[in-house]
Image (cartoon, rainbow, N blue to C red):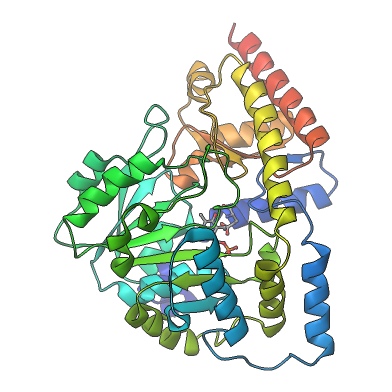
Length: 402
Ligand code: PMP
Ligand code: GLU
């Protein structure tokens, strides 16, 4: 019997994370000496601030090297409760918070805790690539609802109303959004909340991981801020990865109704137990220390965004919408692709890699066929060279097509 026959149907069906796989492949090519500019990065290019690293060093020296409670160190859970109150005006008790190994793990636990076979989860596209796979790993059914660039890449109330069925178990809201960089305005969240108020069987999942990286004009607001009545059936997922340049430390958290958090905690108790004790100590320092670097990161991303967006805007065969958060842009290359007789964004990404030495992530990975995700988590000179290469490649392509 072939070893493949031992795989569960779940394991046989799951796709590996394309963002991680593409990123790893590009890093390998660069290490091999290939001249590639990597615009795939799904993480800040900054180092974790020194004070946070020092807190981890101290924790190690003091011997904080044992298991912690499954749900996280009491001090960290208290720091998260305080953060949610201070920054988000959301009140939670400590038992409503679970610390996990990254926000990805928080979401994974959540789907395991709330989905029965066949339960539908509404996922607005463009979406982060792991959502549908995580839903399926929990036996759920992703219901993808697509929004175009013209619609600002955002789910409308009418679309949401149409997508809700008696089998809908949850809806995902990710603002600022990976991969489009779009942020929902208060009015847009209000419209979605009005629909959700009519469907009390629907759990709301608010993935706020990019909350600090936004320049949409006002303070960050999630759907619970807009409609406090939804708090009783919303799980807020967040973490320290993006705001504090701590992707490798693997600390995320979920805050929500106590029975859901308790179920997630039971599940986690049989899988990873607790998140790394040392990383938890670092996360306390991140949440409780000076927030100056967070603001600095955001300012820098915004400047880079303005530069890259400005360059893309001048390229004739590229359509782009400015982002108001994250470190991603999602330009549309369909005019350039059409001229070449292809509608396949994966092939186009490969062409950019081979001809221009430019690595981007094809939109279809995010349910956004025809677009490419450009990450501007690189320094400005790199972004300048990257945009020069892109412009030259598109000009050559145009020339070829006559
Ligand atoms: N949600 C979104 C939208 C993301 O882009 C990411 C980053 N991969 C995550 C969650 C998970 O973040 P973490 O590194 O904390 O697991
Ligand atoms: N969020 C990042 C990305 O979208 C990190 C990789 C991942 O976990 O998917 O590229």
